[in-house]
Image (cartoon, rainbow, N blue to C red; front, top):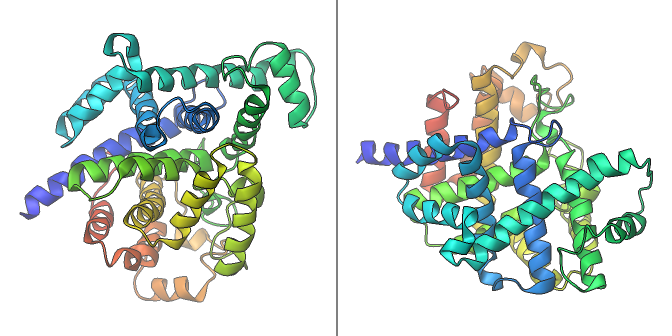
Length: 375
């Protein structure tokens, strides 16, 4: 029984780690493949809000297709091996195929997923190349939208100018998360040494990959599509307030208050704004099975990324943590006194009690503690 369970964990971690590779491969020298996935998902969320391309309850399938399609496009052989081992690997293989050949599969969702990735390329070219070449310097989203509209860049959204502006605005704001390093890895926290440090956008993609893998292997009784849709947008408040950690001199209550206001501002006037906002507020409350599962995936993905960095040799020794606000806390110092010798040991001790009512997450965390998951 233990061997079977460990095999399930191994399969889930293998899929997650393949998705984790998207964080380190750059698509154009600037954004990573994970950023590309995130941008495409953000577009799908906004366009579907305005134009109802697919039923709202099926949006999660489209977002999953984007991830699976880009994974297959870049890691074809490894992807086949991963999907062969997953319990629901056949379903995901089909969805990846729908993404690549939506016409043959007569797949509306696959066509929409591929369409969003295509638009994402166009928008990134607009922001990273066209504006520079034309020497256009403005931070006004209204001015940027008008420039993009005049060059026909927003025509592929739809035919309603007000809706197109809301889509463009939402994408523009979410680009900020492609540039913001996760606070846990910055110079005042764990000061990770690596050529590319995880962005908030990349973390969101990691949480979705983890949710897919764990649902596949352990059959959680949840609506995975709802979980994926929520995880796609669960960090949008950080566009305004940044990635605040428990060690940054702000109470959880204060953080939630300012973050909820930020979420409302970022969502703006999207047609589906109420559902998007409510899904994030539900995530914060953790009072439904989907919200709790999404929350656990959010927490566990950070733990896994810490272990990835340890296995990559990116963590500094505990003797070099003089400027680390986490390391200075009394709780962490107690962990060191009780035997923690690495950065991940502290992550493990700090978070292991979170999952006490869901043993699968606890067992996955213990598995990654005991194994080199980057091998």
